[in-house]
Amino acid sequence: MERTIAPVVPANSSRAKRIAKQLKSAYPNQQLSNCQAATAKLFGHKDWHALEQAIEKRLASAPFDEELSEEDLATRRTLQADILCRDLGGIDPYGNYESPADPPHKEAMSESEFATYMAAREGQKMMRFERAFARWHVLFSIVAVLELQPTTAKVPPAVTFAKFMTLYDAEQIKELPLSLGRWWKRNIPYQPGVAEALSRFELDPDSQISLMKFGAYWGELCFHYAHTIDWMMAMGVGYLIAERFGTIYAQDSGAIEDAHSRIAAGVSKDEEKFLLKEVSDIFYSGVGRFFAAYPRDDFGEAFKKQPGAFQANAKEAIKVLASPRSKKGIWNHSR
Image (cartoon, rainbow, N blue to C red):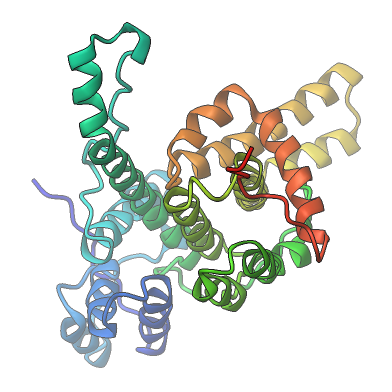
């Protein structure tokens, strides 16, 4: 039997209209009417008209999020994420989107096998890209539900997140698109439209929705311009976005606040070390989640094996972005 969301009826339509507009911003390729329809489903109604009728007639409401048990809230949010993934992302949230297996090393191939592999290589690259974006949509739908919290009794307050285990603070992350736009214009002048698009992107450092959208754009550029943007720049900038995602993930979990209060109450050095390691693990788990749904799907596995390499490349990318005349960050094919 298909699980459904019990109809939640807000006091008026303003909250639902706000959610629909936020979804339109999160999914800019969708029509507002589609976002309204998805909003109605998030509230447990079959369509926008049914939601409006329920509000107008003041029908009885199912419990809001604050009134649910942790288990029931988790179930509701899973169903809401499924709705966004299917209706606005166009993706089955339970599909198999694992990256296709890498072929055996070319030295182990026969001549005919290698010829077949080279012929299929471009198709496999696009398959990897498409599956990565499917994984992106699955995670994005979860992030959108957690950030927008459509069925809380009150509009959740805006939250700002401190710098934690990151190379950039919030203001520096906010300026990252503009810095990248300047770098692109200087180093890849034959695509000025991309420089303009990067520069115009309004990145909210306190929104995982915004971070994922910008990460998807930069990751897609690094996929399509893999022979232009070098490994340091692709990896380093990706990590700067991912670590901000990770710090929000860690702070949202409450682990940092809990660790600080327990340490302040008095613990042994070993216990303090354990608590800080626990928080660090949550942070890196958030960064890993980001890269697991990244257009450059090779970054996910690379981060698991060598997180330090990402941090080192991010430090180099920061130097490049800070230098107005830097020509670093692109492959020099004349070498």
